[in-house]
Length: 116
Length: 111
Image (tube, each protein chain N blue to C red):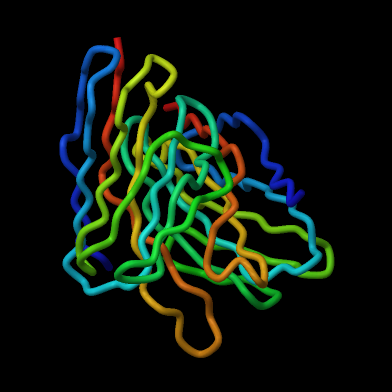
């Protein structure tokens, strides 16, 4: 199972601030993901990466951006936070499947963001 | 789309058995995951099914029927700590590992 870390766990900020949510994993997984989840709702994929220098937008449109300069690190940045960005942000990484199985994703603890 | 459908809420009694169903679109189906998510916490991996049949892991079992687009998660000998949301997630061929999540089923276990 992956050791995957997210900081901060909770963040309350004012509108217009630039923020970066950190995500790191120590298992050397190539694939990493960012999800957004509102209370009681499903997870929506907003960004993913298949390795260093690879980033793609997910199924849910997001004003955030990501970078993947190192395998273990996949930060998410909001240039100008707004109240509509208030949500929980979950980072995940996956190990390659074996024997024809698909990858299994393991999640970090999440960052709960509140924009006032 | 690839609608993933689960009941929104379920209630069961401590010590009982509960079955949580999940249906999905079969076209391009690759595999199905079940995750457990306690309130305010991250999802944790429970099971993965790619072939038809039952996968048993302790008190939890997961079943898949590829032809029917149907899966269930079976929880036996329910404990209070099993109160959580249970997320069904599907991968489709061509999505290269991306998960499509259902809304989740919130299970409340009562004494």
